[in-house]
Image (cartoon, rainbow, N blue to C red; front, top):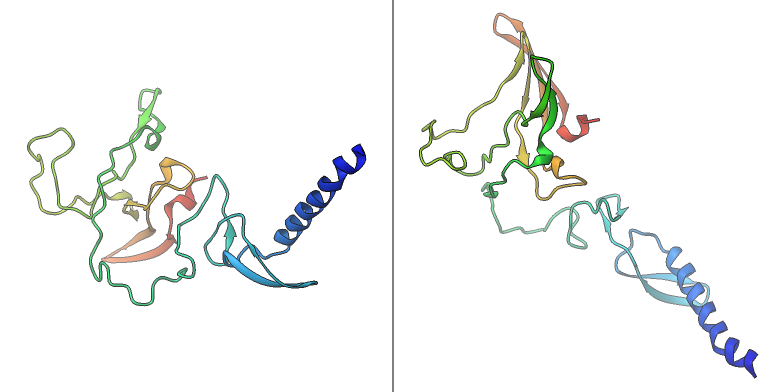
Length: 201
C-alpha cells in the first residue's frame, strides 16, 4: 500500500533525526568532542557539531573563530619545551591597503594616510627598507616613534599578531599607555588598554 511504503520507513527516520537534534541541543556547548551525559533511557554519547574557543568557552562562528587551542590545553602545556626565554622571529608583512585610513591634509584635501607608528618587525635585526640596497639609517636598534603633544604623550608599539581577527587591519595591536609630563622630571603614567583594537570605534 502506498501509505505504508511512504510513511512506513520515513516516519521512524524523521523521528530519529528529530530526537538526535534535540539530544545534541541539550548538550552544553563547552563539553569535549565525545561527551557523555545522562539521558532518560540511560547513558549515551554524542559528538559536538561545532567548535568552541576560549575560557569560558564560546561558540565559534564563520566570522570569528578565536585563537586555536588544543583540546584540554586552554591554559597551555604543562611542560613546554619550545622557545624558553626566546622571542619568536615573526615574518615581515608589508603594509596593505586595509592598513591605510583617510586623513585630511593642510590644503583641505583628503588622502590615504599610512599607519603611525609604522608597522616595524622588532623580532628581527634592523634591515634596509623594502627595495633599498643600502640602509639609510645604519643602526643596530629599531627606531622609537613618539606620539606627543605638549605635555601629553602616548606610547604604543605595534606588534604582529598570530593571525588577523575579523579584518586584516586588526593584525597589528599592542598595549597603549598615556604619560602626562608634570614638569621638573615628574610624570604620571596611566594604562589605557592592553589591546589597541579596543579603542577603534
